[in-house]
Length: 529
Image 1 (cartoon, rainbow, N blue to C red):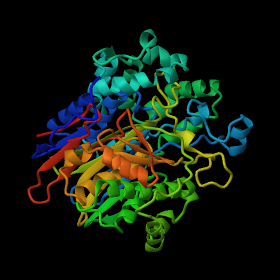
Image 2: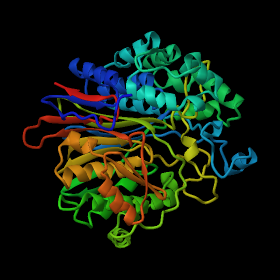
Image 3: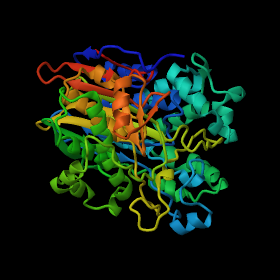
Image 4: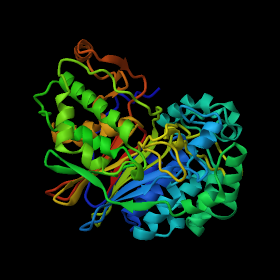
């Protein structure tokens, strides 16, 4: 098996345009669009469409999407493409169905109305330049004619075998002959190709209305879901532009999407870390300890306070205030790990992130996800749509900001990021890995800005993540550092699978050249010209 922990490569350099994704076929598709004169939005849509085919466990048209778009010389804005709960999804209805205290990943009630297609079409209508049929061409080809499964995809796919086998329709498509495809084997999704052709021809109506929507609703209802065709019709327009939230760190502005996403947790971690000297003089053990303690504080508040923005007004201003940040930072004891915060989010790790900078200097930070591996695992055999499981993030607790309710947005873990200086974008960036994403944003930026690390090196550095009462560490962290952390009270767990992934493209402030990185923990790459 390929060793994704030890693989290393230099950053990618280019002069005019660049794309970075976690899959080589996706990067190639985006680069093709850039070479043909398409812009950053065009390339992002083409790339993610390919990933919906070639990384089916990570993303799909049955999932959700967020983006931060930075037009050259224009106002930076964020797109919320997350799906809402069905209108009939009340706390009483779910409790009457026997659910509680959580919504299981494979339950039809974990399926919110997919937001990805709404987001893609909103982006394309507002900022795209090439037609959708051109942007989807490679994705349709791979869906209908097949594509080679790559090594990291094969590894993650195989790990989901037992889960996928629980749905006969998903098993028929994703477990041919009862097993996951191996690296180098061909796989195809013909019905997904048909869906992409419909969306290219009809836009949002090709997914959220008509026969396709009716079939999806019928399948979800047959599973016990509360979905209606009216829910899907409303879903066509659920993607909407919002104002990014931000904080200052090491002389730069870090932009994130506002709640219902966990970008606020990333900003809170950075605000806490800004109270300490995070430079090169800090030992590795101290650095890991500080990141762990700051993450636990931020995630505790995320889980208790973040949900649909209507349910948590003014939460950004409150959590990023000096009063709150100073109080939280003062709780960190450099000699001892704090007692674990209470987490109430289910574990999840499956997402794709990509970023693009085009020849005109427009930049986009883009993320698309099914939530868990293969989402809910519920596949509609009539349409080929694999549904997300984002509704599993909802709480079944009366009064909780993230309690499920009619038309509510669940708390989201997928977060695109944008680093800016003097109002201009200098680096679209993102980190994959479910819970890890907020902590990963802070760790990546700290490596770049506090330690002056080269981009690809900052991505590939050994990772750690404090999740619950466990401090996950990758094998590259030395024995002496592990002993130091254990002496402070951290319960260590050495990971057998890499922690997350990442992509970024840095725009050099002096030359305008582009420096790209794509995490070697994945199959992807950054390419440009």
